[in-house]
Image (cartoon, helix red, strand yellow):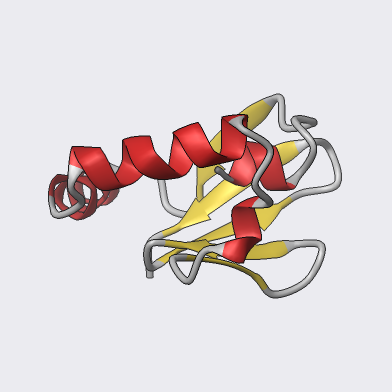
Length: 85
């Protein structure tokens, strides 16, 4: 979804804090999301819907995006930083 918002120019991603706790936190957050909900959003985006037209997806500015409560920061070098805090 974030990739779609940024016109598919993201080549890499990283975590703001790369450790086991961060990985477990991301897994926990993803487990709370219904697969059908994610699939519905992805199908709509592939069909041409603007990703930020959903209440679950919010683009604050060119660098900050919130998707299902996770903050993503787009870095200048086409890297997406995932901030779980």
